[in-house]
Amino acid sequence: MTQAIPSRAADCGQLLMVGLPGPAMDDAARELVRDLKVGGIILFARNLESPEQVWQLTHDLQHAAREAGSPPLLIAVDQEGGRVQRLKAPFTIIPPARELGETATPAEVERLARQVGRELSLVGINTNLAPVLDVPRGPDCPQWDRAYGQDPRQVARFALAAIQGYLAGGVIPVAKHFPGLGDTLADSHRELPLAQSGDPSRETDLLPFREAVAAGAPAVMTAHLLVPRWDSRPATLSAAALQGWLRQKLGFKGVIITDDLEMGAIAAQLPVDRAAREALAAGADLLLICNDWPAARDTARLLSEAAPLAARARKSAARLDRLRQSLLSSSSSLEEVRAYFHRG
Image (cartoon, rainbow, N blue to C red; front, side):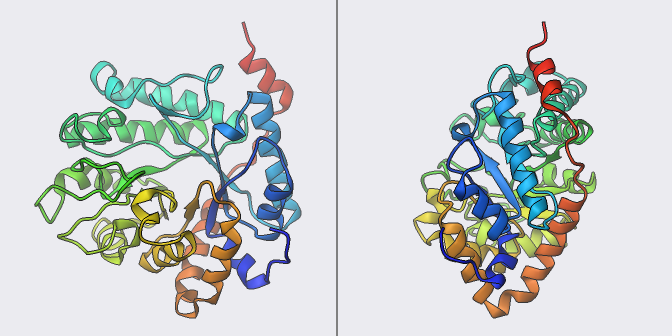
């Protein structure tokens, strides 16, 4: 990413959430934020070393966004619990959702989510890609341990508690993975899962999402899932799924975030830039590219050249701008971070 970025491409950069190569503000991160003006950054283990280092990284990223005249960045992490939590001790360790569903109450999950949210906010992370709203049918489902249970009403109760807790803790929760991976047997990281349920209304899978939307969930993440009763395309790339079901039937008005467009379920069919274009056309707002940060430039350029998508891009940008403008700047100091994480 060394060439000048055309202004039209930079306009579409705000529709991207992109991973970074390392744990510090480097040239790649600077160009993503300053020149491409991405809307968000997602952090992984390669970016995370200590609470102080995370605070410094997020501080530098937001400083670069302010210098570029952009609203605050969405800075996200997967901090679900169990096997999916990027931040380790001294951050709070979260049990797997299945364990919480069996041993905790929704009130306890809300308190835990509030504590996790406060810790994320303390180090400058303002978005948690959690909770999972999938309703797995059995242990063969790849989401088995990541879900609060097999009863959709229980999943809804616990997920809503987590959403409320994260919001109270100062971070944006992201309900995932719409329209539900609970009736699948394949892992979308490697291949495209096929919905096993023959119910065209997907009521078991959609009930938690329906209740989360009614409760005001600010963001929903898509699933790379094929629902043959809906469409011949994966939900992430399906207007029937995102506009017909999520927007119109469920009434969702917030931000739709794709799952990683580099996952096998999508990458086996399309390169990242084309997948992003088709996801935007389908109704997604924020396009997730977790590892191939150099592809962000080509993706933004391709989006900017897609004239038929201009109106949709403007709507997505407006939703993202509202969400980003709602973010409160982290007021914590490095001294406060040290005091909290190294107490007692």
